[in-house]
Amino acid sequence: MRPCIESILNYGLQNKTSKELYEQVRKDMTFAIIHDLKRMGFNQDNIKKSLLEWNDRCIIKLTLNEAKRKLCDFVDWFFKRECKLSCKKLADYCLFSSGFGCFFQKKTPLNTLNYNLGEMRCYLENKYPQYALGYRLFNVLSVLYDVRQQKGVENIFIGLRAISDMIYNNQNGTISGKELSRLLYKLQDEDIIKIKKGEAGSFGYKRANEYCFNSIFSIPVSLSHNIALVGGMLLTYYVWVVYLTYYVGGMFSI
Image 1 (cartoon, rainbow, N blue to C red):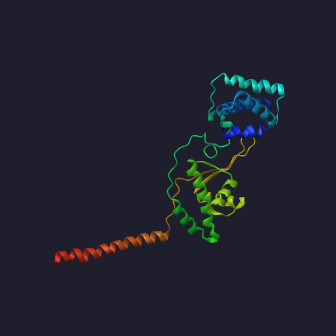
Image 2: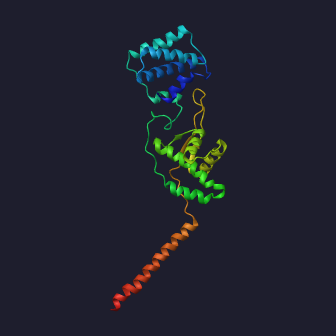
Image 3: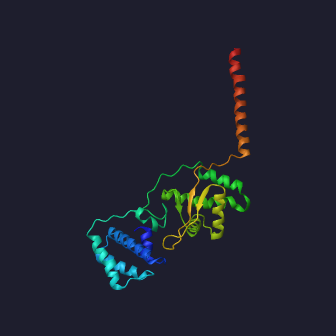
């Protein structure tokens, strides 16, 4: 079942709106619930029972007679037709704009990053050695990277608690929500990731924050790295000069 439909089925319609809008939302979600339950193999009687229980969880309940007429009769109408439902029709009720948490979303190819995790770890730990800040930044980034790779989505929707739990499982260490938030925004300040704060959904449920990797970010080349690179080039040049002087010059002297 789609996460947006499952959430509304479990908790009911809780957001207070105008009567006209509420009735339209009820109609839309009745159709959606019937569609997904039928797709999952539920028969008409079981779907009717689920809708009546759902009605009891809504902030504005229908009377029993109204529920039978508006909900149960809708089930009979639905089963006589070949009805389809796309995620595009549910855009106003979506809990996740794309990707994480919803397997119904279409996945797009991931952008290629200009670095690997080993290079990023060296960069962060060298730049922020104090209090192991670079190490902690990398732990947070690696969790986001793992989610990105596992789900195959560019935009990652995940809550702070889920990130904290993954850090605990991977690193066997705990981190507070305040500290985790500070590290995430530090990564954004570095232009490594971009963060879009979660907004309230159509029914008052808060969406998780959206994270995406900045695919054009490149690890800055440090001055010491440049010196080492130039030094290596000079050493190679010196070796070739020695080779040409003593080996090739020796051949012409024979």
